Image (cartoon, rainbow, N blue to C red; front, side):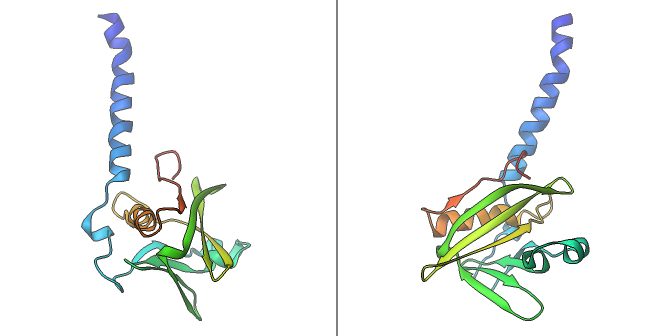
Length: 151
């Protein structure tokens, strides 16, 4: 009986972690774009990163739809086909305990990379839908999975 009581908290904790991981991998219909032009937000700029960030990437908002990835700044919108994305990686940099992610694409031999913090929450899982859309559009792309430890 004592042995069972000793392992009960461990069992409860592992069950909670299992449910959280399942929740991370699940997307809702509201998080997935339904057609070209139905943009879903995956990252917004923040005041702190706009002010103190060292990169132009932190000053843009990022969206995606069924066909494209968008970088929206005050003056312009860059549209990149999902088929041209070659890599979506979590970097080792963390800001406020959130990982910085990078998206790399190749168009006509020119490679470009942007870095951002995703806006994944339990109520907005568009970033998971974006990772899935990139995998479907370009199966040869190196796309890192979103896990509880890579948030």
